[in-house]
Image (cartoon, rainbow, N blue to C red; front, top):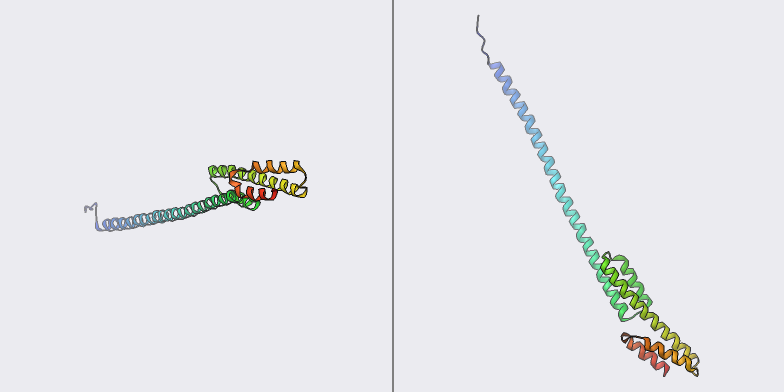
Length: 164
């Protein structure tokens, strides 16, 4: 009887071939898995850059709206008119910062009070001009002028000239 070898050429060829096939399959999955990782990491980088751009534009819009608010408040403080007050109110709606909105609302109330005092003084003076002989109307006009603040000196002097 002939003794068979446990390991022959046929088995060696099959084992090498199976090793190469399995190695190729493993290599394929390793490369394919790596490309997914690269794609997701590049996607994450792209999404981060995109979100950073969005954040930057939102930040710029917020800064611009805050600047517009301060400018409109300053112009309304200098010249309290209903148009300027409307501009301030419109600018307040665009600002997201609660502290700045509260401060602007506080200043807006003060400006509105000044405008009300100016309008009352103008009405009292026009009522006095309609009836210049009435001393009570003159006193009311004088009292209305006294209520005006130091910020309204120009308006106060122009209205005082109308009384005199």
